[in-house]
Image (cartoon, rainbow, N blue to C red; front, side):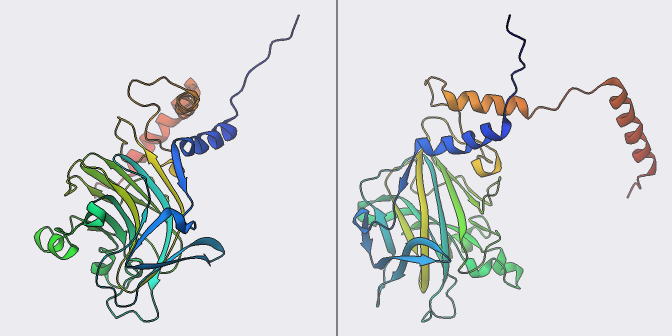
Length: 293
């Protein structure tokens, strides 16, 4: 007779598997492959920045338009865009340069219209609270530039997030219908939420974007399709959250099973009567010593 065996869940292994699973649904784009990019008003070249192989983008000399490196043949509607960026003012940039860098999505008509979420890295640690509040930005080209949004709805389409010029910063943009949210630096909650994307519930291409006077670097671009189910706020795999377990009407697979195991494992352990009694005594003692103010 075989002895009874206790099956234990290896949580570290499941966690590693869980973090890897979203990549199965996303497409990793080799941004250093210039043949995958359509360049507009921008100079591009493979480079190494802070020890990381990446794509370097700078405005072309004399540029007066939007600087874009569009991913060829990839249509985006709902889902998430993950990448690492590093932006800083170039050596020839003016005083108003902030290292503007980000992502344009749902590009239409050859880049004549698109949604855009970007960051201003030099604002992240500025000794001026107002500038810090302008660290992240949503705009919609061409009708809704930052100047119009800031004038008509101050503070609604920009926010603070910690970042530094020239340092690698992870961005995650989650898009569903007419809403988008931006996660910075692996945070579990978005720092910027937009519920009225100006192009509506549309689709289009995805592009890497740099603003005036920026020397920008990009790496680790992954684009994932959402399916039919919206991603809740806080849906950041790096922080232990998830966007969905399956597509609407789909079959549950290994990802759903692992997520279920992790969810059950995260539930609080059953408390024995003695431990419950001690906790209640401690809570009563704390309430008796708390100040009403």
